[in-house]
Image (spheres, helix red, strand yellow):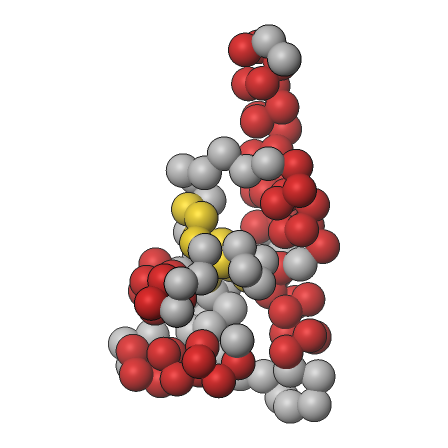
Length: 117
């Protein structure tokens, strides 16, 4: 594949990620509800904030910065099928999911990630 084709493909994948990012559920961190998450947890295809991504890393979850990662086709398809709403429906079928109200409570975030994932 030529360099020009690779750049065009990557541009298309980035546009698709940004489209998925605009869905209402993806505009907030899946864990704490902070606005404008800048990362995606590639283990669960959820949009998460910087603080929660650091805690996910403690559990060896794969984190990708939205603006700094060259996603491949399979990852983009999984993100399009996944996202925060799909994760809520998968992990919280029988309970009423509420993000942790205070992103400053790291111990609650850590326990939530440990319990849910």
